[in-house]
Image 1: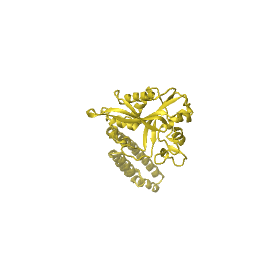
Image 2 (image 1 turned 60 degrees about the vertical axis):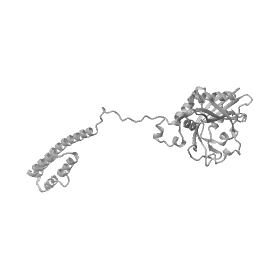
Image 3 (image 1 turned 45 degrees about the horizontal axis):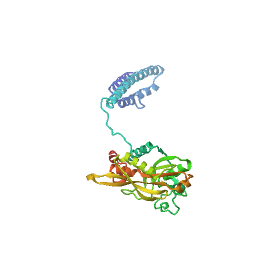
Length: 333
């Protein structure tokens, strides 16, 4: 019995001296584990008579109760101390100002596209969209592009492997054909979207680029309407002092066709012209193939490269900068 009393005193002292939860658990193992002194005292019960076993059993129960009470109290105290220390070390000081993060903004191409669309929507155009993987019928046939036209060759056009006559659209004009085959005039739409060409990447070319296509079909539409629309667009986007000029050109789906330049004023009083888009009157053959009577209706169409407008407006010299996701470049706009 004296051994058990002495063991209890040492156990309670060890519990009180435990400085953290790991040390406290080690005290539990040392004094109550399978190889502890307590286990040795319990083993002596088999050598005692009934009266002795009863007396020792009472003492063992008293030891366990005292040990458990002291252990639980110390465990709570150490747990609360550990939690308090953790809260202090991880404390969030709400009086500190937040870290300043640079605000996000749309990509330059998105900004320019939204500005361009806003101009045309203000003129009464609505936005139309179509698939990027397009059939040859819409990408070529309905746009008056002959079967032997060079644009159909794989050196210019990306064909979708495994599908007959399906291409990644080379322009947004297929959406014009889709609109004209499903809607009756008057039609006034602009078509933004990505287009694809089998081009090598360099400072001015990319196999993926963005366009905004425009189409207006109604009775008595003339080149004057086309010029007035494009002049209003150029002045809204580049400045009210700008002018445009139309130079004769050729596109299979417009007749007559024109390249459109916008005037600019450079340093030192230098003046000149920059090409920004292609346009023309919708070819009567295109109208007829799309189910519109060319004797009653006429229309104009134009296509503008969004990358080109962005580069001209913001002085970007290399088109690759628009696709490299360099935060230093993007933060300039």
